[in-house]
Amino acid sequence: MGKIKYKMTLPGKEAIYKSLKVDDVEDGLIIKTSYDYDLKLLELYIETNSIGSLKNIIDDYFINYEMSLKIMEFIKN
Image (cartoon, rainbow, N blue to C red):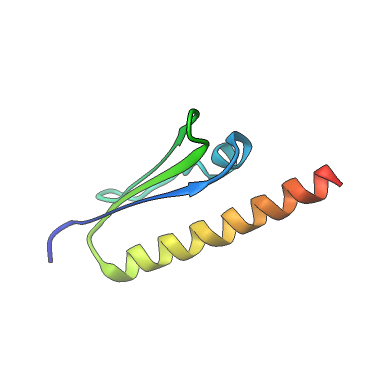
């Protein structure tokens, strides 16, 4: 199988974007998180070699996304 490329956007604040930036990846794996300041959207881009790897990355990303939302809500209150 060749490279699998995946891109998605999610609503979010800049603080969430900063908490989700990935700083360690394996060779051949690309995970980029960027932020659209005008639209206030998180942008996730992934390149990997397997569907299993993609599934795990997305699963981890959503767990961290939800945790970031909960922490921001906790701090707000």
